[in-house]
Length: 428
Image (cartoon, rainbow, N blue to C red):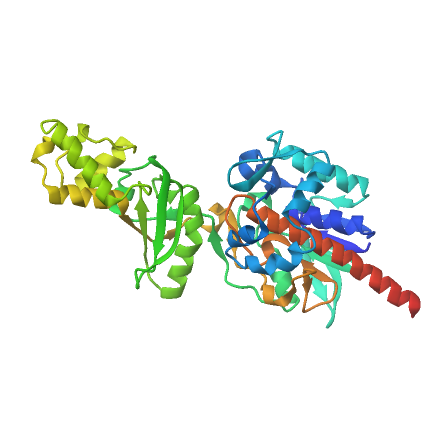
């Protein structure tokens, strides 16, 4: 055996294929009973295999050390991923925001194509095979001990076991201890792309539970300086525990980091339910509709493209009697209401736990990884790929792009390392 790949997720599968295509004898281990479990559930079961935005845009959508990927992208990038899958018979189609899905809308087609390629390359696959430990000499990888006591001695090892999120797919943080045994630093782990929690009364009383705001503008503010840390304009959802939906998932890492950096118990999140309309325009529309029908109850005199329950809630927050005739409402209260439509504050106290997150923040420090090869700077013959690295992006094909690219690059270079070692031994 030349290369041992530990982990059968997207990065491990691509690493095994990359190594085998470059002439290495490859064995792929996974502790679960089937490969590609995270791939099979990604994109709602449709598998968002990559994103077709320009590379600079992709890096912007990987706020957790995305720039580290530039070297790997020079070897294998998103367009190469598309060509790779199409060569395997998986036609892809582009959807909103550059997201690429299989034409069949089936993640299983992606998984099966990868498994067929592994079989063609005669990669040895061992499922239900958990690893106990990875041992090292002072300079390089020495051996891998399985939980059944078996000891393997590959020339190179690729650790691609994922992070600690979505644990039912097998990502339970096993690889961090092996990385530390090699002398690597593990940066602080935290959940990202995860719903936010709040102890606001209206959340605890489930007043807004189930209300979805389309295309809301959500901003995270610094807990002390109150300056805006990030803003995302996408759909969001009020839940029984807090806030969820695409805009909230993208904001979540900034909430976590703000809490970590400031020690604050809560972080302000501000919701603009009508980002395309100014407060002045909202006020003018309100004044006009009231002037047209001053005797109509306030709750029936709203011409806003928003869920009724949300509008009624904000009216009450503004001190407005929703049953009162519109013409009796003071302009000051109407201005407060218009202001809440544009800036509704929610104090967020954290996130759901790591196992509920889509992505793990933190991991093996990229400062200790060679960016063009994914090789460890600590031990020869050791490579890392995928979510175990301290790289994390937004949902939308960015994390899987990182996983596939780092896997491919790790596999290619692990194979090259084995060939160099064989040449050195033959010459000596």
